[in-house]
Length: 224
Image (cartoon, rainbow, N blue to C red; front, side):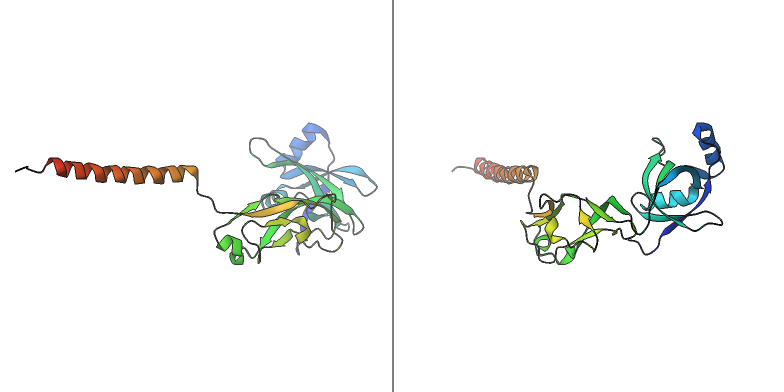
């Protein structure tokens, strides 16, 4: 979990529907819905510039945040869905779920690979082939890891990194438990077919030029 929890300013939204949402956006806010925690859903609005900053920095979906309502205690939340403008690719609506220290959530977290610069397989010319960029986990809402880490310090060409080689943080479990799935492989270096054909053609061309020069020299000799 990130050491700094993002805080969004929040107010209750008085008008629902399309018209109300447009009015909210014109005033520099973003319409949202707050739900969960054994409480009824509430239409709220969040400061647009705060949401935009978090969205662009990848700190929205499945990331623990807080909403702050003046005169009330900050509420822990996790964004479960962000609707975006299909043309501008900018957020237009957010769904937030109330959480607490007792809440467990299913989230996707990225894979991070350590010691790539010291990996014997990569130093030998191998290529890191990432099979799963994200892993789905169950985790306490207040302890969601930023990433799962795999160490490549001893990985050789041809090695396969399975999920069993990844140490899970305390309280975190995998949603897929029936198999030891592949996270990444160290693939052998390959030379493309095009490159091989180009090299062969260049060699054949060079040989042809040598033969042509030899023939031309022979024709140019004066017989006595």
